[in-house]
Image 1 (cartoon, rainbow, N blue to C red):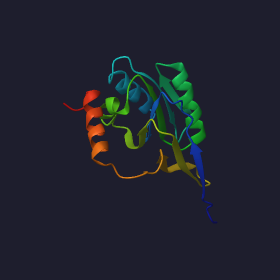
Image 2 (cartoon, rainbow, N blue to C red):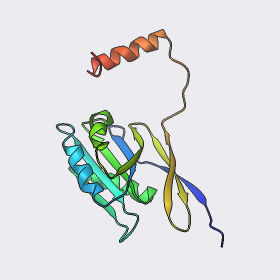
Image 3 (cartoon, rainbow, N blue to C red):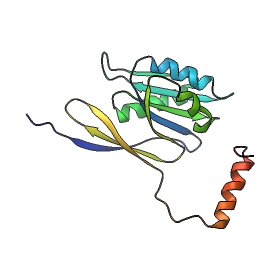
Image 4 (cartoon, rainbow, N blue to C red):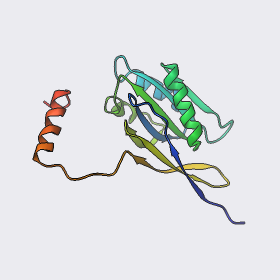
Length: 164
């Protein structure tokens, strides 16, 4: 018997005013632990998350404090359809606000992306199921920063409070 392997490119549907986090986890407890981690990470955060079970009933588990973002997470999780993958959509917070807390969630195995850029997910298909192979996050570089660009980057980080 030979296994067939094919690939699919899934473009994530995401409005411009959102950020997302895509990762892999390994246990049904992920949904509750990620919910708690997000809710504790930033005041006023709005989020929705979806997690694809890889065994048992193989449901897309969901949670969030914003029904629009939760529905968007479910829609994109269905499109990806990879076992043990999860996707989070954020409003009124950035990945940098929540990643330290998410890294403490014991079920999370890895993160594929944390971005506001257009995202494509490379999904492999076999007779057993689907898995994430990688991501395309935003566009390719257009050049190398010059001294003016360096100054703008440093000024921006200080303006938004990430550097003193």
